[in-house]
Image (tube, rainbow, N blue to C red; front, top):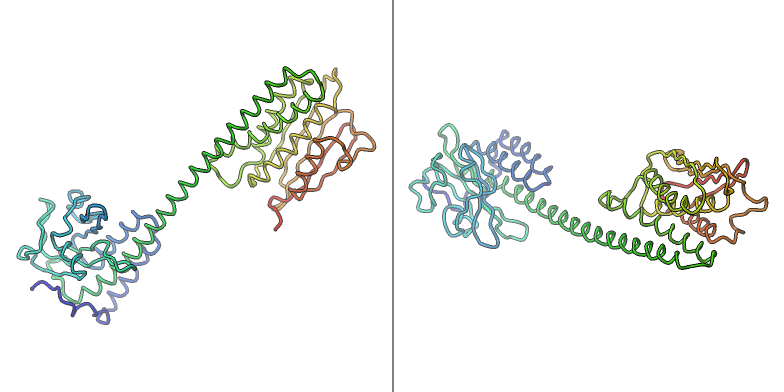
Amino acid sequence: MKDQTNDESLNLRDQFSGTEEALLRDTLEGIQYATEFKSVLVESMESTRQIMNSEASSLMLLDEDTGDLFISMPTGPAKKDVMGKRVPKSKGIGGWVIENRRPYLSNDVSSSGKFFGELSEEFTTRSMICVPLINRSNNVIGVLQAINRRNNEEFTPHHIPVFQALASHVTAAIERSRQIDKLHDRLKEKDTIIAEIHHRIKNNLQVLSEQVNSELSGIEDEHAKSVLKDMGSRISSMSRLHDMLCEKDLKNEVDLGRYLKQLVVKIDEVMSSIHLKVKIRVEADHIEISQERALLCGLILNELMLNIYKHAFIRDDADANIEIQLRSVDESDISLSVSDNGVGLPEDFSLRKSSSVGMWVVEEMLKKLDATIKEVSEGGTRFSILFPKQRAD
């Protein structure tokens, strides 16, 4: 049979047999569900081989930089030999298809003047059907080839519209996967930028903390020294969260229990060197929460613990204890309890009326958390806080 390059065969879709339509529909499902570029190529070539009943197939994509056609995903006995090989866009059957934007069919490529030649010594091309991949912008991005119809059968003009239908879906899948890959690349770039920002914030917080600590040794005024110590502890609370953000690869949520446990250790390291040694017990459920709300909880815990270290115990108290409990109440609420066995709160204590900067910080953070707090002073002090896992809209 002579080479088929005319346009008479391009509108024969109404001649599909029921079997061909069913096979085309079934094999296209795999292409439509594939999103990764490589998966799209694999599914496309498997579909080509099944629908065209060919010994081999190849997807040749156009390299926009060099203009060459490179074989992206071949199938068949010589696939390892031809994988990644290139053909000049102006050469071969693929080049002709791209230049003319038309399908090509030949059952005797050896006699065709358009055949570029064998790309593998292990395979002989007898027949070929080749169609262009044309995207929505009407640009040719490559060609799809089916090689050597099985059982020594021939390709016929009837197969061209079948192959074109397949090629249109393959083109759409390739374009879709490329767009997804671009989006993934952009997200990675943004993650890198955000990671750098977090790293710089962490370093700046560390510098501030070190500067505060260095200034302490030269200050004699006890009130000023106390203010600086509290400031340093608050900075450490924020710095610890930034450490966790970097460790968790910038996830939107952090493990609140783990964060608070690490924060307690840091606060105890600082405060036990200044005040008396306190035994601390932390019981925390695994609760995933947003970064913003975790920071608010950390600042609240920081202020409550500072207040306990400063006011709850006397110097010679050898049995000073702090107990912290973090519990998931239900699917929507969290409870945080901070208690001690110290001297207790003054009878007229009120969080809102307190002149302490630390208690003012607690009150402001509670508002941001949409939280409620109860104070109980019996055999020590207990602060019980209840707040929603997510901010109310």
